Image (cartoon, rainbow over all chains, first blue to last red; front, side, top):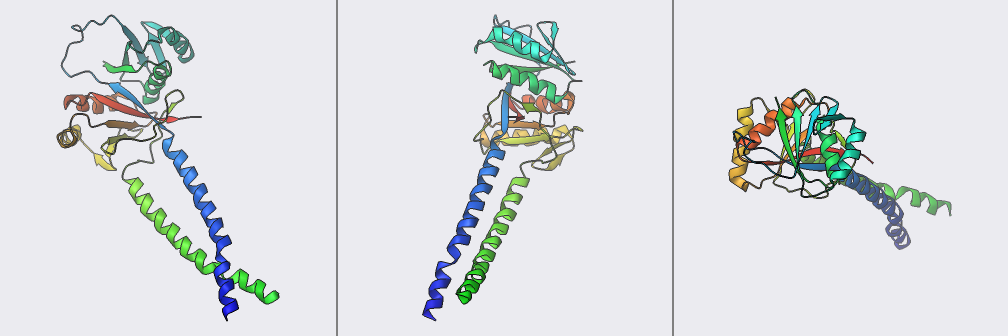
Length: 129
Length: 137
């Protein structure tokens, strides 16, 4: 009887270790899933404030339409926009992203993402009507 | 020798069942906690440059906008924008004007739906909002 009890105590270890490994794998997988989201911080204009008043010397305007982008009035593809933005790697530069109501959220996110990639963090989103 | 082998095979089952029950309880608890924050039907737009967030402020107000422009907060549908404005206002009163607002919009949502939400946020004085994107590797 005593012999049997000793065996009973010794055996579950291997299965427990198996399950501990499973738990470990589960936590690793879920932890990766949670961090795969990026949050792009933007500033919104105050309602009713005219923009003509504030003239900032360092200002970059990007317009976003459905699948189309323009930088300072010149239409560019997304790849060319990225190349063009490389010349403006100044973290103090204020970027105004004007978005058409027809545009899709992914167009805006693509532009905001490119700006962040070039270290431009002062992003303002304005709606084009 | 054969007898011992039989015992080895039989013993782990009770311990395994215990742990399986614990796992089930764990999954049930975590899934219900997650669900009231994340709307699984939203497919975020992809971003390749921005860094992934590691910790987010627990005060964050998460506003979900699906592909058709339907808005919900914590899976509670928001049918008119006044309702959203009241909600944002009460969050601002509760946690101050630094309360983070996160907009989780589907990649194919038209911007006018996003704009409506942004306008209400700006109207109550929450000028800094965040737009969620999926980091692709």
